[in-house]
Structure formats: C-alpha cells, structure tokens
Amino acid sequence: MVHIMYYRINTISFDASRKDEYMAYFDSVRDRIKAISGLQSLNVVETGEGEAVGMAAYDNQASAEEAFPTVKEIMGGMAQFFTGPPELKLGPVMWSLNKEGCDCCGDKCDCGDKCDCC
Image (cartoon, rainbow, N blue to C red; front, side, top):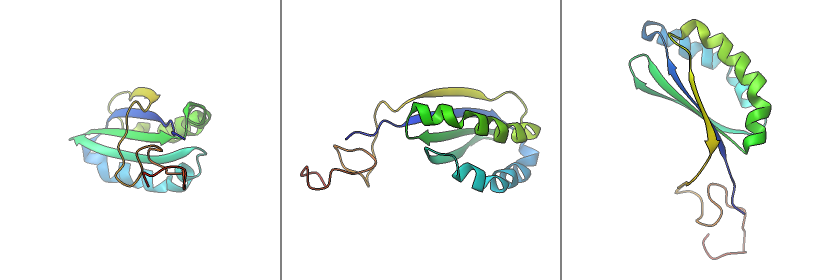
C-alpha cells in the first residue's frame, strides 16, 4: 500500500528580534499541535533572518482540511510575530525517499511478508 501524504507549507516572515518569543509560542502550543488528528509531522526551517518555512505532513488531504480551524487558531496566535502575511501552499507528495522505509510502501512499511523489499 502506498501512503499518499498531503503537505501544508507556509512561508513566514517574522520579526527576527522576537525569535525566542516566537519559539516559546511554538513550545506553548506543542500539545495542541500533537493532538491534531492526521498530522504526521511538523518542521519549521529557518531559511534566513526573519524567514521560515513550516512544513506539516498529514495522512491525506481530508485530514489537512479537518485540521484547518485548529491550525488557523494556532497561527492566529503567531500573528504578533509576523512581519507580513504567510504564504500558503498545499498539495500531495509527488515523490518521496525515506531511508528508514521500503521502496514499495514509502515512509511507513506495512507490507509485512508480502514483498521482498523489507
């Protein structure tokens, strides 16, 4: 079985002088983020001074859409750190490589004895 993940990617401009506060906010909502159904992972990458990209992987498009009200509320709390509106991109994974997974199942191997790849 191939797992089709769906990503929410936000490009964010934030006040670099408030980075520590911004990270403290993330820590304060960690449990709320972990409780989002269908969310597999969230990574925020600092791409420059005052710039970051947040990449959230969901099980599928439906779980990403169901999470929207919670994500909107959490991001609303981050608005105090933004220096411009976030740029949002959404979409399914086209291609993936995970050294821990197998070739036929992608990131999560669930084929058991059905194939010779794992």
